[in-house]
Length: 432
Image (cartoon, rainbow, N blue to C red; front, side, top):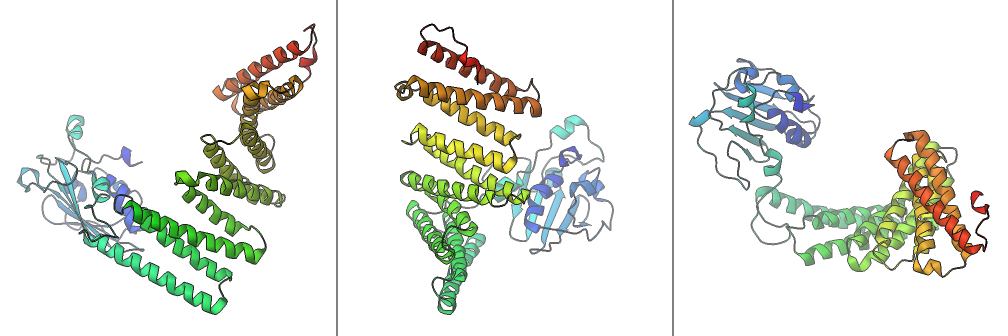
């Protein structure tokens, strides 16, 4: 870990948090020709500062080091690190107050000024190290002047370039859609792929919430929804029903609906459809464990989102119980009966059954139905407790919680049975 590297100049932090992320894969292409980087920067281990990335170190006079990161994916990035003490001119203030270390960036050049007031020795004591401030590089680089891609307010060169690229992407996707439609027809799957690309471009327009007005953001999201819907219709018409490609797009559609309070019901409908599709799809791959588990995981994620949205809606507890029952079935089929996933889903279903049985509406049901729900809940929790104790240990917090819940529900079931029987001395509650 970089935290273990003695790095008072924060070069290791800057490399790991920013330069590697924008340069992509890099290769080590040089050493220091004039003196060592350790002498110039105070780094004990220069190699570890790169964290398996690399660059060219070139010393330019006392206390100044240039690092060139050679990228295989993008253009090279040059970093100048200078230790000037009190002789360095105070750098201009950025958006955040950086009193000791400051950073300047354009597309291809980064300059770090270490305005510390120290002569850098080859070794520093612990109290001196504490005085070195971390370079707030990634925070400063991720915040730019308040401008927008879709208004006339002034922005920097990066934003102007991004706006130009966005316009080009939209134009290219529209041209591709016209060509695909002319060549393959409106209902061909190749045309659906262009719809998906267009939707992704529209989503890029909407993600910068602070740079776009609310109307522009809604318009971009609406366009993305229309494109996803068109692609889904093409896939499902061509294949006579839901297929994995359309199911994945429905997941994206549900996430967009979920952002709008007025479209939460549509989001729940999409999540329910996707969950049931992947639950059925998982059962078709009984011979392939990896595919079956992947489909089960997708189904469970969709059902969980459905449950989350249903908690704040008018959805009945019985509807939630049916979905939880489906989740338990998917967990058992996808991960096995003796798995943590099956344990968790069984516990969730048991608690929902107990909640229904003890609710005001549930109390109006016949005593036999209340007893059946509590009996099923107890069986599920006993099974979940056994699995948890076997996999996690009897003293694990989750095992103890399941055991406690099982005892409480069993006690409720006993009192229900005792109230139904006049003598109250029967032992039918022992049969679970």
